[in-house]
Image 1 (cartoon, rainbow, N blue to C red):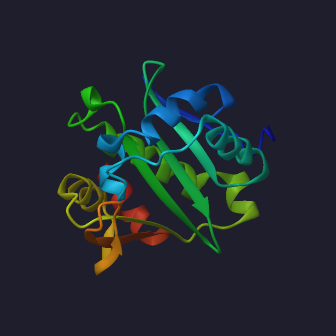
Image 2 (image 1 turned 120 degrees about the vertical axis):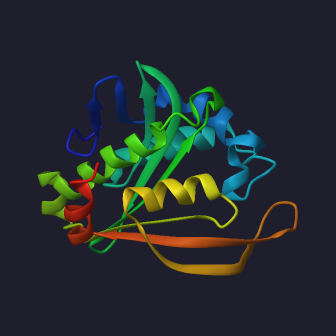
Image 3 (image 1 turned 135 degrees about the vertical axis):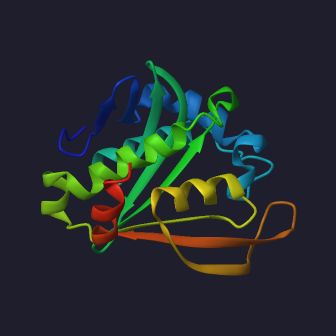
Length: 189
């Protein structure tokens, strides 16, 4: 993998790292688990093959965007991703192992990734990041609370924006954090 694109962010016992092919089995298990994927609109899971997951991971080598594994004390417990657009990054996170939920870890991992996206010189030389965006299901109050606590601003609510696997209409909330807001909010972390 191109070392400039591969990431490894560490703080104390927390790690965000680019997914490797050896992570494919774990990611496939999580992505096919409806309880993990429900908030993303896939209550039946993705029904994705191991081979499809391997190909997604291999695409990390060709892109600035990355699929990442998040670890606590070297134990994989979830995944993050970021996609680089025109002067912005879109991020996502899932704490897949429920035993790690409701401990404030999601907030810490998001803050680490935000720091990286706004301050990494190699990335910002290739594509300057002016803002970070994300979205979540309107019903996902826990995630919305975390995003707003970090300092993301709600941009819009998209009512009945998409249909989940069960045919239920779902609404989403779009959030963003500008570089300027990051500078203000970072002091609070």
